[in-house]
Length: 161
Image 1 (cartoon, rainbow, N blue to C red):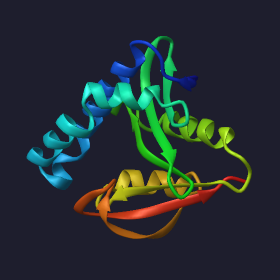
Image 2 (image 1 turned 60 degrees about the vertical axis):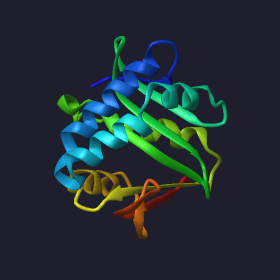
Image 3 (image 1 turned 90 degrees about the vertical axis):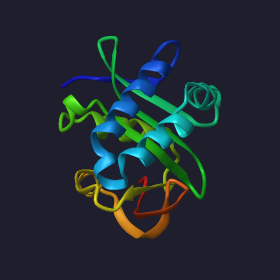
């Protein structure tokens, strides 16, 4: 599948938010519960939050486009290297190389020897396999996945080379 990856603009920011929320609703209720999932969507995935993040020039707010349709989204910012806060693919299009294309684009934007890292909710086995497949290695654990206290996660990282 051929996709174009670039910085989001215009209505793509809202489309990235919609895709992220659909992805969360298809994955996270089984792992953290429906109420917690909906709370995160309401607070951390609000339209205002996404608009503010997309406006930060120093951050990476990327979309993967198939034609004009947003089929993937990645948001990353500087924090002990480049921290990937979100990577989501349209639930109907997983396994088609979209996530790999988003990460590849991010990696190309960074200097050699830059660190990219992220945390994956324990039990999100598909995501764990994906990151291992694209060259990320386990680098520890946290009890605050994405900064959310009490949610256990595995930390992955990769040095861009």
